Image (cartoon, rainbow, N blue to C red; front, side):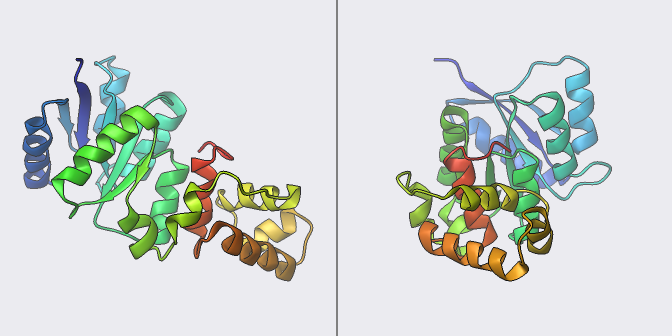
Length: 214
């Protein structure tokens, strides 16, 4: 059985070495390269090196950070599957990585078994988000994320798609030619229907149900 080829991108040498050692211990994975920042990711692919199946990408890095590197991959190597690794659980950071095409978001203090499962899930199914990120840290109830039988009205779908963009709620209201109060009502209605409590919950639902492709 062919191993899953992995690239690690992190500017902290001790962490990247430890992560390399950890991932390499799993029989199904093969670490083909360890890179220090996003700029090295760009150089790696521009030089036609072997493409990995999964990239483990830190976010806070010098020269080119993880969000910028993921955006470059999204535009130039759209089939690449990136899992973000971070100490941050801020909503805007996670949203930025999702918009940049990341297929998963893991905190660096996860258990090794979760990392193993995440790599396999992203490689096989295309995405993976821990309950810790989607529920505990973001206060988003994940029950609704697994519901595929929810019927959304056309304007709710339009609002949901715009929620996955970088627009503020005020800008969404302007784009939909609605008042901010009406958009707020759409948001609250979707929170209730999807059992989500934050914008992240709406975005994750849209991604998992393939309503949007980021």
